[in-house]
Image 1 (cartoon, rainbow, N blue to C red):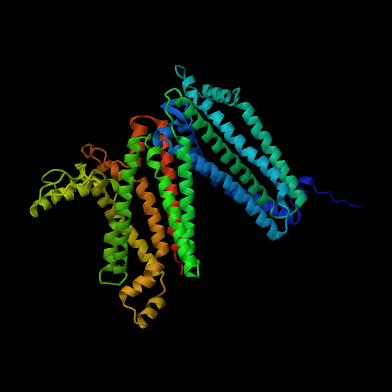
Image 2: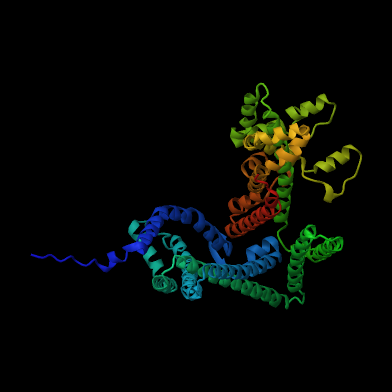
Length: 560
């Protein structure tokens, strides 16, 4: 009796062989990270996308009409159009860089991947269709709250209204288009990967898909910028005034480009071997940067139409950051080097220095508020009394610190040179006291990673303590300094809890940074749309500072 083996089904045969094993590994990997992707989308991507949706509407407790960029122009004035234009150009450049990378990989591996541009285009369509569906679906879902007013709230009612929102006339076709494009993109990708039979197929499809998305976003932002500026000009025809947005846009963008070119030319001067070329590069870079300043000087004019409270909050935030970051890093570096000398009791001092960081922030702020109270009998004013000085208002003082010092010396200080208020200086002192211990511990860890052989060799060669620190210790601590400065800058721009506890109405808003402004707009004035727009402005500022810090300081990091 003979037995015949059954032929494997097509679905099982697809997972056999070397390519089948790779496919199983890919599917297993994606299934393993699926929960993480779901969490990131739910608590990371979706809230940001929803905040962007809110910022484009007039939103006070409930959703209002679509406003477009109005919340942003109310905040930063005409600078909104400059930012949109720059982002649009960045999208086009990003698409070009992605395609360039594909070309480099193709030459490196002798591939011809350009046929993958088609499935990449369809995947880009899937992403855009998904965003469009979400943009149309959100108002329908949020509208359920208005529909159930006056009705008995039951689970059946909510499910029925949710189903009705999903099948709305404007929503369901968008969902159908999204699903259809998804299956078409998946089918094209599988066919292309099956016919090409090379491991980089998925990489090329993803690169082309991102390039198409970047191209569409860039072109879309430029189109939105153009239409919005034209609307401003159309509205200005009635008043007969020229908004001057196009000229300001051209000047600021040209100045930014000239600044980048000037910086690159200036940096390239050190690579020149001849004196003539070195001098020419320096002069060329200087001319470009001077021209850039003359063009960018238009920025104060273009932002004049923005929210004065926002610019005041940004000024307070900058004062807070400049007064906190350099001082706390300098003190922490000094203390870490001192404690690293293995002095008697150094372990106890490490604990003492770290205690402020682990102390509850609100409790620390409450104690500092009492220490620096404006009362005559407060501890700070008591110390001033012992020194024969007049008491100060401290956390209630709105005058700038330089103005107060100048007044004490009989000098008149102009308003632009007043500096941060005394109340803000107290908050800066609290921030320094809180984070010096944390930075000290991190610096100590960095010092422990420096090989002792380097310092010992330098001392044998006759280097003194300062020379060892200047030429060996400090350069090798640059990764630690870069890390701490990055965290400190981001932290100062997001600081809220201690500032909220210590702020006083008598300080006249001189202690209210950007974060407090956003909080007031959201919870006090219930202007959810405008508060969301301010949050994105703050995010853009933090991101820009991070990139600048990474560009300037990151290039000087020495990893040994």
